[in-house]
Every structure is written in C-alpha cells, then in structure tokens.
Image (cartoon, rainbow, N blue to C red; front, top):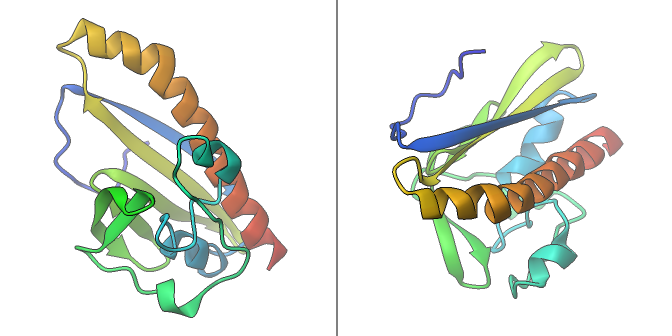
Length: 160
C-alpha cells in the first residue's frame, strides 16, 4: 500500500506501519485522535505503563470539545510539560501527523474504517549502536504502546 501522506522522511529511518479495522465511521473515530497528547486527552493506551516513566498521563474517557481543533504548529506533549512534538499536518476525519508519526483514517465501507499508523524511527541505519537499541528496546515497547493506543481508540469509537 502506498501511504498517501507525503512528508520528508530521511532514507536513514526505518518506518513502521500498523493498522486496525474499526467498526465505526471516521467521524466517530476522529474526536479521539484529535485530542491526542499528555496535555489533552492522553494517548488512549496503557497510561499506567506511561506513568512508570513519570509521564503523568490521564486518558480521557469522553470527547472534550476544547481539544477538537488541532492545528499545524500545536504542541503535543508526551510527558508532563516536557517531550513534545509539533502537529505538522492535520485534516479532520482523515489524518493527524506529529513530525512524521501519522494516524490516517481510511474509509472501508459504511461504517467500517481502517486506522493506519505510520511511525518513522530516529535516524538509525548508519549507526549500529543506535540500531541495536532501537530493535532490542525501543521498537518492542513502542509496539506495545502503539497497539494499546490503537485498541483504546477502537474501543472508545465503537462504544459511541
């Protein structure tokens, strides 16, 4: 599948792509994506695991109107007032991108939607030490957290 969002991603990065089918329309899924971030509605993942690393994460259990209009340039925090990314691309009900980490909503049929998540790694292909760290530690933990996020979004959207 060719990913429809174009961002400049270095060829020295490894890109992971994950997807899940959700029995809900893009319009029911989008509000959970729109409020992504520690400073907003959380990451819909395993907040207890994120909090082991002092993220002070709380995942919203409802849609908050004040977080529904993310715009390019917004800061999205990963931890309490530290570690953030900038929203680089956003199109409501379609995609949300934080410096390359992109959540894409692809309509399958009514009411089914595919949530596709693409994540470009740090630049690792030229550094064997960083590549070892990435594959041994970061990627397995990132897989757990990102899968948890995708399942959390699915549960909340399908419950609506």
